[in-house]
Length: 165
Image (cartoon, rainbow, N blue to C red; front, side, top):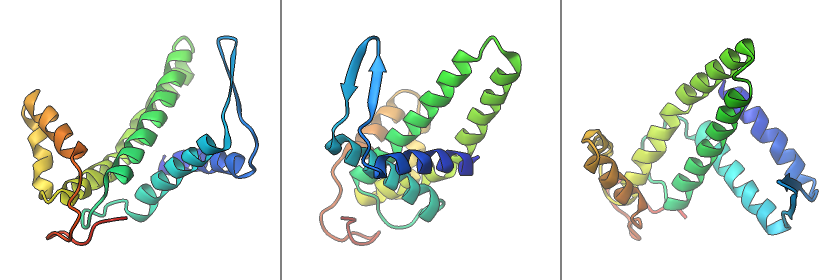
C-alpha cells in the first residue's frame, strides 16, 4: 500500500517537474498556483519520500521541525484524500469497502515512519524516544507531546547527534 501512495506522489511530482501551471477550480473561483507554491509542494513530496523510503524505521538521529511537520502535512493530505474517496463512494458498497481497506492499509503502513520521525523529533530537543508515551495520558499527554514537538531543537550537538540542517 505504501507503494501505491508513493506512486501517486511520484505522478504528482512529475506534473510539478514539468513546470506546468496548475489550475484548481473550487466553487467557481480559479486559483493560480505560482512557481513558489509548486516548489513548496516539491519540498513536501521530497520530504515525504525521504522519511518513508530512506528512514522508514530509523529511530536514531534527529529530525528538525521542518522534516517532522512536512511529513505530518503529507500524511494529513493523504488521509483527507482517502477519506474524501470513502465519503464520495459511500453509496457504492464495493468501492466504499475498497477505499476503507486502502485507508486502513495506508494508515498501518505509515504507522512506523510516523513513530520514527516523532522519536527523531524528540531527539532533536534532547528528549529520549520514551517521551512519546506521554501521549497515553488522557488530554494532558497529547497537549504535552504537541508542545514538545513544536519546540525548537537544540542548536548544538546533543546525545543523539548533530543537528539536522
